Length: 424
Ligand SMILES: NC(=O)C1=CN([C@@H]2O[C@H](COP(=O)(O)OP(=O)(O)OC[C@H]3O[C@@H](n4cnc5c(N)ncnc54)[C@H](OP(=O)(O)O)[C@@H]3O)[C@@H](O)[C@H]2O)C=CC1
Ligand SMILES: O=C(O)CCC(=O)C(=O)O
Image 1 (cartoon, rainbow, N blue to C red):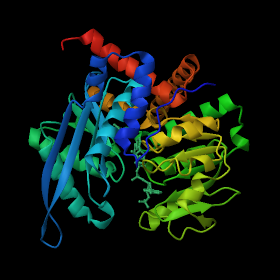
Image 2 (cartoon, protein in one colour):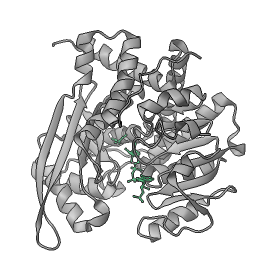
Image 3 (cartoon, rainbow, N blue to C red):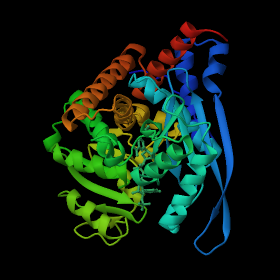
């Protein structure tokens, strides 16, 4: 297949540049005019706030809180909040744009947003994190809202933080507003299935890709980088569908067993050892880079951006890469990966199960009703499979990789919406 791909970026990449180079390639193929190009490129709103927080030792530390709304043309903006020491404005801008494209790929009525605070939640007490989250919520009171911008968890945040956000927002509004945030604990109006939804979508995508490559899951092997929300549930669900998951990892390193890792045991170990796999037995310790280059059928990067780069792309041996993380492949690695004939299900398709079930959570909150797990899973599986088929067919029609095809599907939907709405 002849691929039309973005030009490689020479210097160290940042996620925003990676996102933009794929966007440019797809926009060019679609023949987007210059005005529309600029409308789609520039974020609708970017907010940076200073957040003074009293630390446990009595000192006051000021954090920088970011929220970027890339687009709200399809509906309220939607996207997670990241707590990580490496958070930058460019990263959040890229993540917000990816949310716009992701929601369009799975055809849910949301725009894209993302939030981030540069902090190290592992080095903070629960009280310090709670005060930070509440301060961020108050600072974003005019930004957030069930019809405006609806946050959710991302790296370093979980249902616990979403509960604090919901509580602080509700107190400020003088009423309980469950639909202001998704990924909440069940008791506060969270949806059944949201915790494992992103991993489940990754699994559905991997099985669809295996079908195309005629790989029998029961005779297949996999490796998953990252063992947080996305990685651990992906590993568990792939295992449940017959895949021998030979390697898992977190920041402490990677753990390899060619007979397969016991994922339930690994999750239990992590949960009883301060959230880390450090010291996990029954596996050989390898590096995260070695995990990425294992000769497996399915590779799932589910940790963070730019882990598959020009430097290691030529050593990747997997038959398919199913992107659980946002932006795990640098744009400069695309051409090498494509030349090797590796099927890549891109982030804006493969990890869309999370926001899909977040959408279901918001719908349930607004209806004041609760769906069964069976209904949530059935509907999200169908959305994920339909999106996969649409992107796959687009890649055949345009003779491009699935990544560029996903951008084509998304950009077409968002630009058509702008054209019909007009008014600019
Ligand atoms: N949560 C969600 O619903 C969604 C998340 N995503 C994306 O998935 C990715 C992971 O998010 P999520 O699972 O929520 O995050 P979590 O914070 O729950 O987990 C992140 C995992 O990645 C590991 N990790 C971090 N840095 C590295 C590294 N350099 N090498 C190897 N492992 C590393 C962490 O290890 P340790 O625990 O040791 O720090 C942890 O196991 C992100 O890109 C996020 O944007 C995408 C869609 C939805
Ligand atoms: O569930 C959501 O609303 C957003 C999840 C998210 O941040 C993502 O898909 O990257």
